Image (cartoon, rainbow, N blue to C red; front, side, top):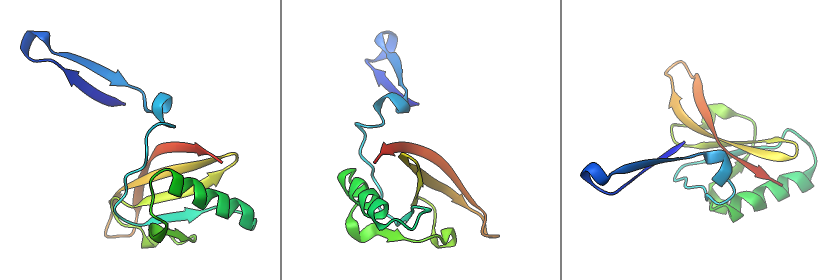
Length: 110
């Protein structure tokens, strides 16, 4: 949920926006790596997924195809294919032991 405040003092009001309603309008903002794993050998799906990521604000130079999530760091994106959607996850923590914590931030239809 996104929290937006309007006004000041006693005229202040808070509105909560559900991310799933606005998911298609929100572009992705990532300054790190984007690991794209399609879980399929179909090159057409991999190319369509890459094109969708670019349409959603990711630079082509940031996108890496692969399966090794250990290359990810905090604030990187992990994108997997869960037919018919791409599931975009944000890495919000990486433990010294190598454990990576992620949260879903967007679903994109291919």
